[in-house]
Length: 293
Image (cartoon, rainbow, N blue to C red; front, side):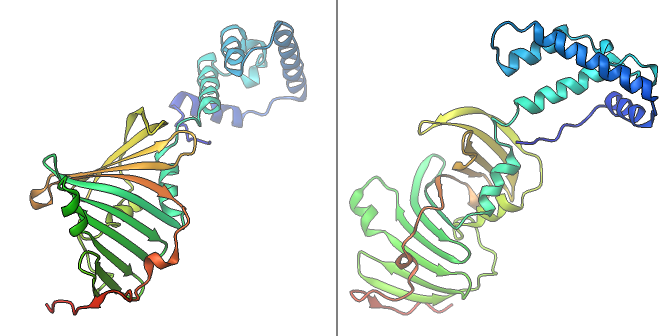
C-alpha cells in the first residue's frame, strides 16, 4: 500500500540540486561502473538467505554511499541520501496497517451493510438495534428495549422499514400484529437516535484530524483504531489489519439530552433477502393510521 512521505528540506534541496546538474558522459559511465562494482561486492558478502529487512539493515550499515556517487557534478550530502534511503525503507515496510483513508473507502463502496448495536446512557442499557441497509435507499431497523427482561424485550420490539428514495415507510409492531404505513421527508435532519445511518455520512465526509489507537484483538481479529470528533460526537472505528475492513464502531455523545453511547458490530456486503425491505403489510397484521402532527 502506498503512503505519502513528507520530505524534509534537506532532501528537497538535494533532489533539486540533482535535477539541476548536467554531468558529463564520462561521469555517468564512472558512476555506473562504481554502482555495479558496489552491488557485486555486496552480493558476494551474502553467504546465506536473509530476509528483506536484514538485507536493508546491512545495506544501511555497511554500504558506502560515497563509493557510488563520486562525480563532483553529482555531489550530495550523505545525510540527505540517508534520509532518502530511510524513507524508501519505510515505504517498503509499510502496508501492514490500514490507513484511515483506506478504511473510509469501505464505507463508501459497498452494496449492503448490516450492524447490531447497543445504546446506553451513563452505562445503563437503553435499547438494542439491528440495522439492514441495502444501498442506496432501503433500510430496515429492528429495535427492542434492552432491560434484561426477555419478555419485555420481545413485547417492545418494533420494525421500521424505509425507502429513502420515495420517502415511504412501514412501522411494524410484531407483539400486537399492527402495521402503520407513513411518509417522511428524507432530506430532514435527524438525530443519531432517529437516523440509524447518520454516523455513516459523518464518517464518509470527515476531513479533519484522526487519532490512531493501539492495536487490539476483537473476535479473534487484530484491529487498529481510528478516532475523531464530529457533530458533538466521538467516533471510533476499529478495522482489521488483514482485510482493512471496519468491524466495530463506537459512538459517544455527552451533549445534554444527546448523552449516550453506542457500540456496533459491522458486516459489509452480506446477501440480504429483498423481503426484509418490503413495504407491503403482512397478511396477519392489522393496519393502523399514523398519528397526525
